[in-house]
Length: 345
Image (cartoon, rainbow, N blue to C red; front, side, top):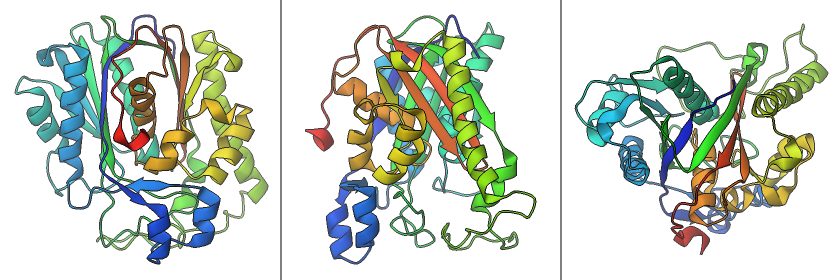
């Protein structure tokens, strides 16, 4: 999907305090061999702070930085992976009221697993393009995995789930970055990967994604599964580059999922043939995998570090269980004032 007048006007995050991976290994919470493979230094942990409260903080910050009048926000999309603080409740409406105001707007939750940020960006972009009366949209993400039902250190192989929130304001009126293209590819034949063989249940249960691993269905050979994974990622990237009239070699920065080093190198750096130095690994190594928000968080941290210059093109890549792959190409128009983070001092 190609865009001519779509901009990112504001961006912000809420990043809680990091917990040392070395300490987690010493305490017996994290496996030493896996720690060596992931090469993570720390993971963000919010303890008892609700995900939705973190989202409100990030949303207010993004709005303030954008200069967009809150009344201009006509679409609010909130993406998450896990529990948001209260079940059977209008999560998006709370975010709308607490962070934006009490004017009428469309507020929705987006459940696309770790691809939630880019899914939401694509939905918001399409909505803005189709709605002349909607001048701006707000996209947020937030998650807190501090729960007895989920062991952040052991439940997901190759990564550690982390807490935090992000927010981004999209407009048609200009901003610090221009969105050139967005592309999404899905392959639901791969949904079995995170489902396993257990039957569906009417009540929540402890989550261990390792235990859900199972052999592919008889009609889907393992080599075909691997081929589909590679094809989904490559197709999303190729479509986004085509629509942006861009080349992979011309991308200055890649904001990728904040997975462990081995996974990052195998699934992204080697598969796409991109330089590891151009990725957001230096941030992901200290944050962990922040649910649906890694791409916005990575872009925000690049901006706050003063690493983005006018003319730079960035590629945001998201992957979500189900399985979906999304890719966005953006071009930096202006520098925002850097805000050094104590995490990366």
